[in-house]
Image 1 (cartoon, rainbow, N blue to C red):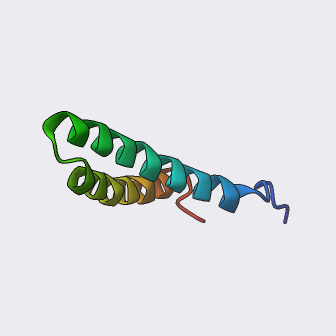
Image 2: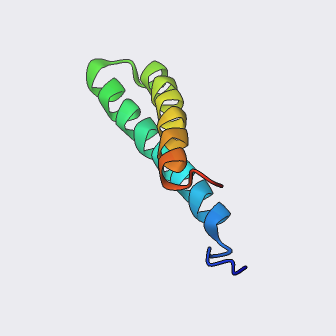
Length: 64
């Protein structure tokens, strides 16, 4: 039985989570700055990014 999975899969999954969270937080901050509510939309972006990160990791690494 061979293990053909790279040993760094967990690190890649964590990087995807962090990237999605930071990207959505940045988008929320940018939109919030335009409409005059940066902090509330930053917080919403963090939440959306976390959920999006989980969805991306589950889609990419379903067996992790």
